[in-house]
Image (cartoon, rainbow, N blue to C red; front, top):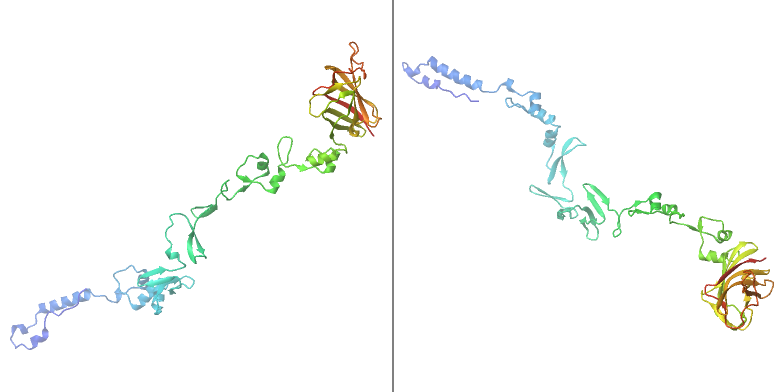
Length: 383
């Protein structure tokens, strides 16, 4: 674009004398001037070169002129941001230019607590966050009130995966999260990474095929002797003796027929069969022989306890006995009606009759008594 510059000074020709050839204006002079004027006009913008509103808002043309109105159109077309910025006044303080979407307008944000500015720099100063350095591992930001500062929280028993925080699984050496066992898992008893609840524990009942929780029987249930789902304790078993339960006892026999009587105790077990009949099992308490020196042809125990005494006379299968140092078949006879009850021992010395029992056939000298491992049993009627 060029401006018009006059080529010929026509006023200077007026001062020239008549007849001076320079005083003459030539057609070429006019052509040169008109050509310069035409060039200047041709390179100038005119009213047709003014931007339209659409061109102003588009902001893409570089061959049209913007008027103040079109500048306003351009500012309004950009969400009003330019107009908003032009309308802002000096806040007389450092502020940050921003967009308030709720108001659909550009505004000056006030720099609040925790932010400071210095020339072109904005710095954060909030609870010590700005002093934290990269920990080189996943951490949690927290407020340590004892230090009055924000710090990195060390992880113990926790794992961070991307943006998820999870509690580690519990082990035998570290606390953590655990899964509750199902009843089936509790009964199987093989899982090592589950925990039992009271309900699980209650489901692990004892059976004849697996160990488990079992309810203790009451004394009444033990006495009744019919329950198959509960356990008997030593206390309830002992208390059941005498009310239909098994009874045991020990006594020291009083022997007759000896100059030197046998020593040691006898043990008995009373097993109820019915309300009026027991099975009595009698044996040497230590299992060793109970023998002495004979001075009579009889052998008795004269202090049979009441607990094993029948109320009528009864025989026992007394097993073998020692007579003059030799073992012989023997039997016992209890005079149940006597007090105290006496058990008399008989032996079989007959070579032809195995059931011929003689209660006066004992040798009156030498060794006699009951051999090691001796035992006998008999039925005890009682009321």
